[in-house]
Length: 203
Image (tube, rainbow, N blue to C red; front, side, top):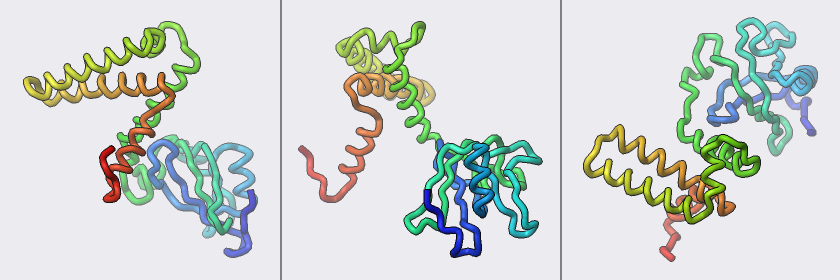
């Protein structure tokens, strides 16, 4: 990967982002040596401009940043480093250096979709998801219908807690059905995105 370290006298900004939640966690700087160490160890290492030395995030606190991917921007002078944080990122004890909680619950749907795809590919024994896939499309579709009815019952005559519970069952079984057809939650997101456009017209 080509990186231009010359624009800032040997340094490039490194934006640190949680690979799962997409939250920006902090901003640091890397020189060539820090970048190389980050790549070689899989743990984010910065160059400290005040101490003028390398420092690996977490070397004193234990809250390391495990590297998932590194990308350079279009000008090759800024890095986007996606990580799995091992605890709070900020030295103040907060999840991010902006005092935010590192939470995006809706992003779990992508993790769940990846998990379901892995189940479809590997078909491990003693897995409920495997049992669903092996039951065939008709049975999976029937299960989605049953879960939809249960969600409707809770919406009209139940509690909000039970509505959430049954809706989660419905969404999970729908994702399994979609996966069996070579589709996924991303396809639903794209469809809804298109519908949100003022140019969208009902088919």
